[in-house]
Length: 122
Image (cartoon, rainbow, N blue to C red; front, side):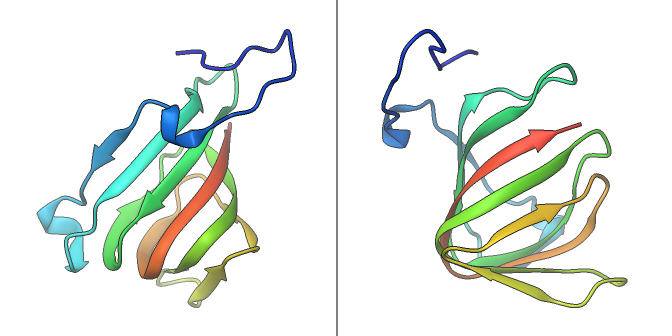
């Protein structure tokens, strides 16, 4: 799904992008039942980066990041943290930029509804 036209300047309205709604699996939930929405601009493939917007409601869940991609993100609003058995809790808020490495396994905890833009790379 290519939703960008690289032949001209264009303004992107994230609310007009295809919305993918998910919830954490019951066995991964820690607190809440947070709704998560992703709106990809360009779907990730091993041969090219993926780009899009992601948001989540307050809650916490365990997750394992795919081993074939890294994520660079920038928080547009809200607050969340990442932590694992080998890394201390790191909090990200509006204006922060961060990385989730391929294969990362840990807990994602949203303390204020969050929205971020992401780039997925191999």
